[in-house]
Image (cartoon, rainbow, N blue to C red):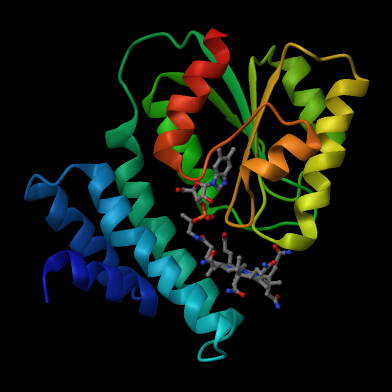
Length: 210
Ligand code: B12
């Protein structure tokens, strides 16, 4: 098994110490940090999701795996963040009301920081009015909404509507998360959708420049 495969296995099993050790090892070996995320860490969560769906594992195992993933990501985060240049744009990011999943959202936040956005992460289970208040307070150009549950997708619609009602029409809203599609984004009037963290950065740059 390669070290990358070992990392995937360690995160899947929720073995935090191994996940940290292998992440550091791969960094020292010169692997680009984003490659570690995309080819080592993210596949672990896909496997976990598959096993959960098949009733091979349950919520506690999912939680332990998520914690191992987060600790590995915490090592990678500083390496992705650009040093010293003053950010030009501010983005608010959060997971919508009713939804506690934050790994994907954190990844998008990390990537945006790396692309020199000033990112204000307002956490999970965020009600629409909190998104609106944060965008006003920080004079954000961009808002990112994350949802991982089909049952919380309607909260994205309510959040987009809250922005429109508040008259914040210049704030661009991008959405994402495993069950989200471009079709859904169009349906609820979001300005953009992206399937992953890397393309979220391209989308964000396009949206703020428009
Ligand atoms: C880890 C996990 C959990 C952990 C979350 C820990 C945490 N801190 O996040 C815990 C154990 C808490 C959990 C709980 C639950 N979970 Co869960 N969970 C997962 C799991 C295995 C992985 C999610 C993940 O982190 N993926 C890795 C990240 C990197 O991927 P991602 O989130 O998709 O993000 C990427 C893109 O989507 C995109 N993206 C994400 N957000 C955004 C935002 C923007 C703006 C943009 C542009 C892009 C973007 O970019 C990211 C990076 O590339 C998924 C399975 C899966 N394959 O998704 C199930 C899954 C999402 N969970 C599921 C369920 C059912 C639940 C529970 C209801 C279980 C229960 N019975 O209690 C609860 C709900 C709790 C709640 N209210 O939120 C189901 C959802 C089914 C559905 N269709 O609705 C899934 C799909 C599992 C399954 N196969 O059944 N879960």
